[in-house]
Image (cartoon, rainbow, N blue to C red; front, side, top):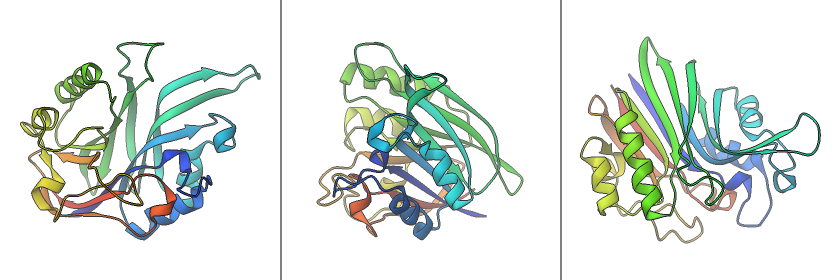
Length: 238
């Protein structure tokens, strides 16, 4: 059994041309033929910048996927009954049995909130735990957040997201003591994902527990204009 998995920071659909266009994001995902997609920087009725659209619902409807969302930031609007949110999302061809968001805000009201989305997905009778997160740039917060995630995860696990760290650093080594970095195991080259027009950094990662065999890993460069990050895609077997 093979599954194709993607992680993609979509920058609330804002491309390099400064236009917000979720149809381009949907096209990148569709072209990749990925089965499970972790998304970062997803707006849910957040603001004028993304036309107050529920972006994860829009993408799921357009692609006919199951979906889940975890807010990292929630703002109550002055307008009645509108809650503005921003965070992480997941799209899946396979049923999502349950989903649970967890806030990673150790300094609330001071630094932008972060979260992790935990989902349980059934793939041909097998139950997988899939996590999506976007960690802080602040070194202290990054350490606290990554330690919490590593200690919380249940196997078999796939962990997706923008970790805001460089490979082979102390931060990275803390994760790969327990989980495999798909690019380190099967990618060719440096695996840079940011910025999309001239990639110079590897910020986006897919980690897996030991139950998975990593068949390949590649950076999708089909439409770099769609976001400021490029998606990372891998094919796995369990």
